[in-house]
Length: 494
Image (cartoon, rainbow, N blue to C red; front, side):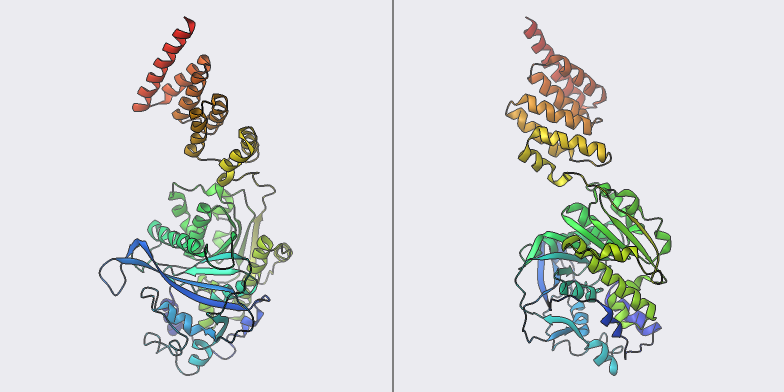
């Protein structure tokens, strides 16, 4: 949901008590770092885009915002709520906005922000300092995925809080594939996932980022697409979802033929607003390689999981109390994964029954010795025999976990064939056949390796079996190889 929608909701349905409305923010547990904030405007020239004010394609605009630990003793001005709202209006134009430019609402929001609301909401200072100098160091990277067609600030308070605990937090405005509207379907999901990957690539060169330590946080549709991002980038250690659209969007995940949901290996904390999803959360049932926690909130609606929304709209006290507890638990959860913190497990064990209706959790007692993304490198480093040993250990302990893709592992064996190292090629192709017994090419590869090694009997058995399950051109290939095998066997007997 974009900010314009939130504003309209508040104007129609809510009378805001602005005095004291934001005192709940004092309950957020901030860390020791001062916070800086900057926005980067860049374009993705590989993806065409039509701006609302235009009728022709142009490069895709990418508005990136970053919260980070800042160097001390700076006198820069803090950003305001209104500044973030003004940035929302420049998602497509990438117009540079100064703090003075954002001192009063634009015509679009002028009817809403009147009187004391300008001072107490629109111009309310935030914790982050505008364009502050970064603190030198090495800080884990947290990527934030926002809701549909959002500027990325729907949980700006949480992003500030994380930066105060020594994280660099980055987000990018979410848009549809070719224009701002973002549909809840595969096209919209793929568009945001690609934007997040662009953001991840950009942050590789951002100062002080520890790119080997990466986590994700997602709200609404962004929660669903962060699962996809984590499946495509296996170095994501931990993920938090604020009422992520994972159950209703699960068919989208299942439609992707380039990911296997069972390979999800990021420790996961999910806050849920719909009680029907607590025991119907397919990600919980499908993953086994990670610790996963699901907390169902009492009474909270979807928009209550956005700090932006509850800053604008006056809420019952239980909403503010619930949000601050979720934010504080998020910090503890990420600290446990990145900073050796030890308070999360205790907090989750004693979760507030007043705030949360229920908890589901399961912990992975073990993880594969080697994950899929690193298996080929493991073989190259420690040798084929060690790699095969890891394969069978993993198969025993994690029978549904596929340690390698067919083509990648096939090519390792092919290199040994080119080197005429047939003994090791046979070892590798045995594993390939074990992992992919229904692929006729597995029989062909192992059969050819035996044939080149002069072992004609097992070669014939394998090639004959492959011929039985082959179709079309593959069948003709098997017949040709068997003919070569017959000639060699005949010559060998003579």
